[in-house]
Image 1 (cartoon, rainbow, N blue to C red):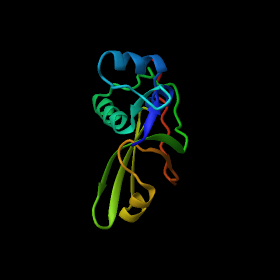
Image 2: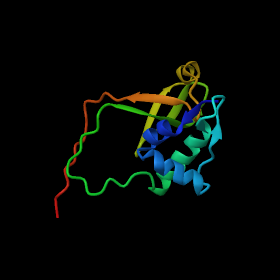
Image 3: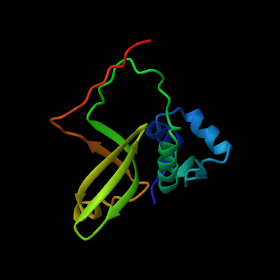
Length: 136
């Protein structure tokens, strides 16, 4: 099972290291020690937390948006994999962004995709929406 250091978990969730520590102190995340004695979070635990935070809209409040254009590579943690005999749906939480990919079940299996695995979603699209809200 993958384990992530606090700094890596914070980067994936789009928050500071201190926020991750506060969440652990409050019992929202469980930290353990790795073989070197460093505090780590189990990948599956972080995936569960990231998915729950996304649902609650709790991860990152960036404030008012003045401009936006997301880049096309999103590093995150796999939060859910749904497979049938042919296809797989893979959900990745990358900071405040939830990215969903459809791929063959064979590809998902070969990549070892499961909740808690670190992954990078690369997006290529001919239709990209860019938003700029009205300033108050």
